[in-house]
Length: 247
Image (cartoon, rainbow, N blue to C red; front, top):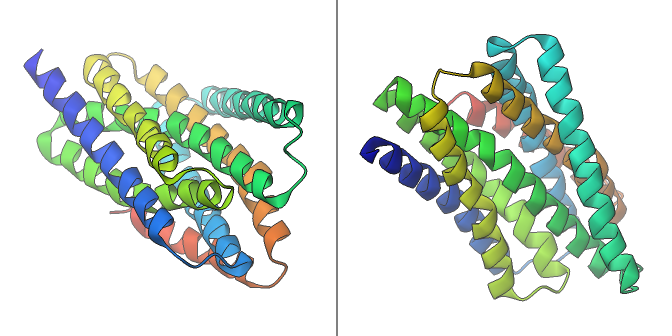
């Protein structure tokens, strides 16, 4: 039981530290231009695509069939569409969704929901990694912590620019990281007993992130700024994401 508690606390620390650091950076960045904001959102989308392509899906395919992985992805996409509709209805009912600020706030909320979902299988990976060996667990935890920093920024910047209080932004950023600790707890318990469940969780996270990138980040980025900065941010995020997944 002590080992499970240690693994859970390590997952919680590394999961919340990266996203919180990114969230604080997103808040203190003073530059509020549409060009910069478009770059941040597209950078995050590129980073997420790299994580999907080179981390989550390959890892899931290693331990499950392609049918299980596609099933998990579809469930992830459908779940995020459901979350998107709920958030959209909440804004529409209060007649808020008609201006740019509230579009940004909605994007921030959707990204935070998606990242909270995405952090759960990351925690599973940390938990099962520690079950395999201390070196593997720590390596995964540090890599996840590093790639959570830009994700925290991508969540905080649209929330801040959407008019949310800074204290609330930090609260939501920390909240999204807590699911890593929850995932680490289950990962430590499940270990190698049910690899299929881990594969479904990884592909579910891939589907959720795929919807965030395609349905929220890229459209919002292109809406904010029509120049090349969006494409440059996307490519830079993708390239840095490749390095992050191979650390």
